[in-house]
Image (cartoon, rainbow, N blue to C red; front, top):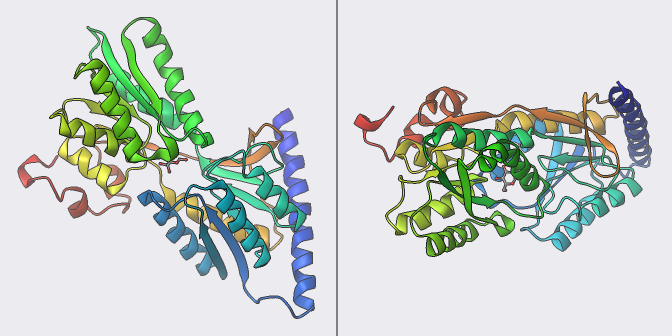
Length: 355
Ligand code: BGC
């Protein structure tokens, strides 16, 4: 109840802020110095993983269909560069700023800069902490970690101990921490009972596949080919881990998890070298963000029902649902949703082996 009230209050504050920003924009228009289209600034951490290019393309397409233009910057996983990108977007007089932070804590400074220019900020997919953020839109990331771990709990044998390698994402990414927390929630009782033993674990700097490969190589060096599963936190790290397994002739023999339902990961699932991924319908995410950004820029109130605490405030938040993808449901999930084409997913699999 308390949360709901504070969120209503926050959305009122938000509406006021947006109203103010909108009237500033109209003033600038009256000066004759204003562009005639709404302008959204999109500052991205990276475009390296396949998903981010699609996030960008979906967001730009939806915004354009609503009469807005999008200026896009990508910071190549560098905080200093991301701050400079955001300064450039603010100088271009964007009406609203959408940020995918490389480092959720470091981008608090960017939110402050935007607010000084009366520009509202939406955190896209990753939370920005320690600041007065206007809105956070993502998937239920704790749930993603829980689903990854639950898959292993349901798949690994129950009559003997299973040995597990864990590969976390970038320490600087708040989502990576949430994925780990979700995994911990599910694994804890099984580790306590001795059914699962974590033999090796590490964080993959900047989510790099080559770091995941190194972590897997280290696990193989230290423990030999004695583990049953690799709990990789996304498809990029799963790819690095599977490459290390392949070089040892272990691909397809170790259960590997992932997340994002990237095309290459779905191909590995179809071929049997990756066991699962998590499908996050990023088109819905990008569309929602474009729609909300345009509404904010037009000074319309935005209602968010959920609140996520970011160390400073309860941030109005929108969380979208996710789905587990395995060999058994590729057709009903990513293919049925038009996320990937059937011929692409099964490209490397002979007809006779297609489920
Ligand atoms: C996203 C994942 C992505 C990872 C690496 C996370 O914040 O939630 O979908 O795989 O970053 O880019």
